Amino acid sequence: MDIRIGLGWDNHRLAEGRALILGGVRVPCEFGFDAHSDGDILLHAVTDALLGALALGDIGMHFPDTDPRWKDCDSSVFVRHAASLVRQRGYRIGNVDATVILQRPKLGDLRAAIRANLAALLELDPAQVSVKFKTAEKVGPVGEGKSAEAQAAVMLIRD
Ligand code: C5P
Ligand code: MG
Image (cartoon, rainbow, N blue to C red; front, side, top):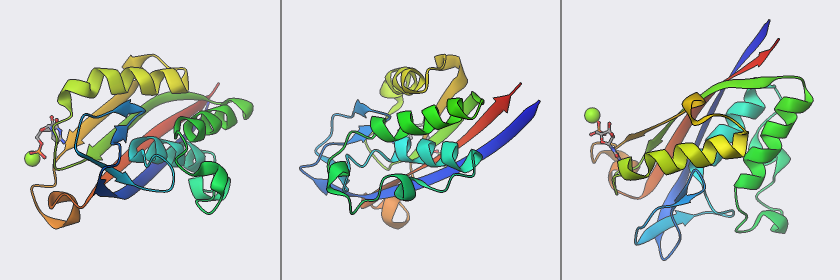
């Protein structure tokens, strides 16, 4: 059995009047991501973790943020593409574990929806997808509400 791990990280600035979308799920909030695409840091971190496990570079290589095609793009496109590369190379995803670090609002009520959507995008069972939430304890740019971060780890298996 061939097993590979991947690690992804992303952050974006927060700005008023933008949508806050995490794992493809709209978070009711007065601010959102100031980014070229929809800024979905969770999907970007998962995409980079999948690409990393395959040693296929990073999200910016596959989807340059200078390309107008990806302006305000739904980040589902990125994660679906990475998942298709996983399948093309004969791997399946064993599990995904991710953390979103956002000072506010609390995201716990959206956990089930985010897990379900991420699982659907990756063609997984929600039991294979973990999403955790943390504040930054009011410290640093994340803690001051200027930005948010996401981290993701994935395991790929080829039988
Ligand atoms: O950062 P802290 O350890 O204080 O977070 C405590 C708990 O609050 C987390 O374990 C998580 O369940 C929840 N949380 C959340 N939404 C956030 C940050 C934290 O639901 N934006
Ligand atoms: Mg704590």
